[in-house]
Amino acid sequence: MSRDDKDGDVLDLIGRRDYRQAVDLLVRRHGDVVYAFCLRLLHDRARAEDVCQQAFLQAYKGLPGFGGGSSLRTWLLGIAKNRAIDALRAGRREAGRVAPDDELLDDAVESAPGPDERADESRASDALGACLERCVSPAEKLLILLHYRDGLSYEEMGALLGKKADTLRARVARALPKLRRGLE
Amino acid sequence: MKLDEVGEDERDAAWLAARARGEAAEHPDPARAAAYVRLERALAVLEAPASGEGWQAKVLAAIDRDAEAGGGPKGRPAEGAARGPAGGPEAEARGEGAAVRELPARRGEARQRWRSILPLVAAALAVAALWLFIQGGAESRGEAVSYYFEGGGARGEHRDDQAAVGQTLVLRARPEGKGELRLYRDRRELVLRCPGGEGCEWASERGRALWRVKAPLTAPGRYRAIVLSGATLSAPSGNEDQDLAAAVKAGAKVDSASFTVL
Image (cartoon, rainbow over all chains, first blue to last red; front, side, top):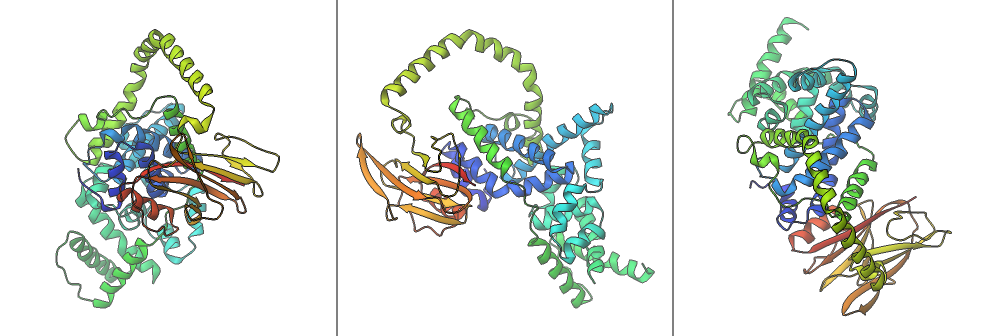
């Protein structure tokens, strides 16, 4: 089992079958990052919170089988992504359209932020927050935040989003100059 | 954007990509390189948008309900671990997705099984309820931590997880062996601690230690009472996450109960 130093205590709790406490720590430690990811995909605060609930409950059920193939945070984000895709699919089904998972995810990543998301971001009133909104595309912004703010490696991001790590690395590298220029 | 700016951006992007791959690359313009380092540092300290704590509390409440109903993880490997290519977050994440999608098909079988064992379960629950009644309430159920509120015209046992400023908290904890009771507010403030705190009373009940403390609730927030048992603990810092991590590392058994003060 690979050990993410930050979650070593959670792995200890899992090893002792104290799943309630383990998920409690995970919610506290990674809840905001998972929520931000869900909000980015769903653009709606209430739906993002619902999906976060589902994701953490499912994680709780799945903790005994956590194989350590990734960090716990990436594992949680993966669960949240799948639940978000389910939510997106349900929305499309209501609209009479069916799309494969990849397409749903790509559409969500590329789409413009919704009012809830903008409201959250407007609180980060600094120039960087504003430039992330204005200077790069929604997908570039997601990648930048996942890597720099949330600390995911490109390999983890690739596994999460179904893309090659090199592709994501190059995309972020192309986005940073736009961000730097926008801040000048 | 001017043409030379496009060229500059492409050069920067190539440098950034090489750097991200771990290659030793030198930027021709040190000032520009420093600007990117500053940018990366600023991005690293951006805060994620804060969600309400409502959904987090709902998750924990649902888990508690599930545990009370005898549900919860069963210690078997998750679908994600058993399926698909070994390792990799995507494999695990996709696996659990598949597990959920298969659930409806299994629900019919599960219902059948439940119907057949329902009378037995009902009988067992009745016996358990009778035993609990005889034993005399929540305290005797062996719960590591329990609480209720006094004053303010309201008194509720464990399930009433809301109180108002001005009410008094009555907190009871039963550590296993040596241990400590701590009460945190909003994860950042250590409100009280037993032993050693004001108003902490110690008693022995049916051969087990019992901490009892009464405390006026003077500030709103999300409170969490934590009983840490069976380990030598370091002094708390006041930061709940850090203290809990230290206690777990020291091998403490952790039991907790949360409530909100409005």
